[in-house]
Length: 117
Image 1: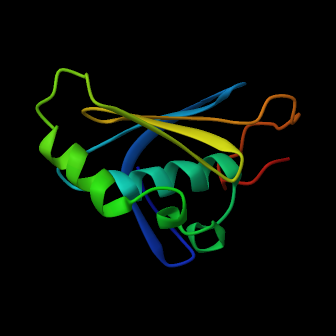
Image 2: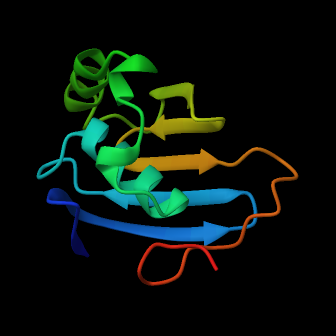
């Protein structure tokens, strides 16, 4: 799915929602992992990428991109976990992102427009 929200290209990624948060798969050939994290977090929270706190305040985005760019051929043994806006983000090589929401927040899955009802 290609999506643009607030003029920011989110790129191609697939995501699924469950009661604990969101899981996504992205194409590391066409999108750096830092952008995939932003796209997934935007989809999960229903917020525009420009309305999210800067990712570089939570993690060194250059280092994150470099680790996963170099680990593309990994057998899945690379994992990085960090927190942003009370969500826990875990990135696993080669192309998987899991974002869990704070427990007990009573949130619902975002609809097709990315907003919560």
